[in-house]
Length: 195
Image (tube, rainbow, N blue to C red; front, side, top):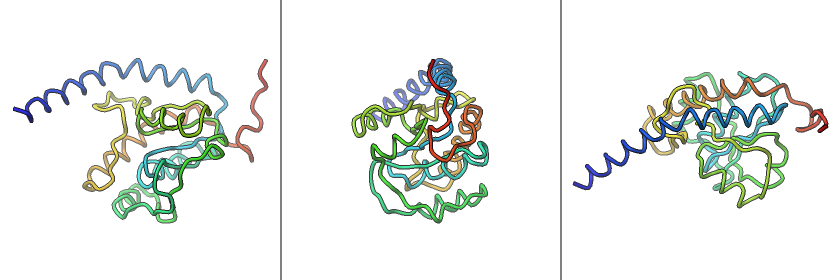
């Protein structure tokens, strides 16, 4: 009985997420258009060992010259787990040099745009560092209707979950790349002055 109710609730959430996705996607695209020029992007996830390091490594292939960085909310000084490194290797990327770091106000303020992997991370970021650059949820850019708004955290899961998560990140990064231009030596330098 309980598992049936959980399954029903999960199905309802997925249906609602798919129904709301076009509106969320349009809002994210409007925010990106208003934030131009975006030269510097910070990718955030919980622990900065799987999703955000992968996005940091993958995005420069799509937005050549963009300044990218990644951080998390917990656990500094950790390497990406072997499953993440292997999934990234299969996609032509090397996560072995990565060492996790925790987002600070200084890190957040260096970027024109902050991209989170889960909607609740936006609020967590604001509580931790205060107002920052515009913040978007990466999954809102997905050109395909997703079952979940968040990019699923593959930490501790099967290799297939890493591949699915990384494939979705790449799909969303392709959309993001249309709004990012080659970076300047210091993020924010060279922005058009406000009229």
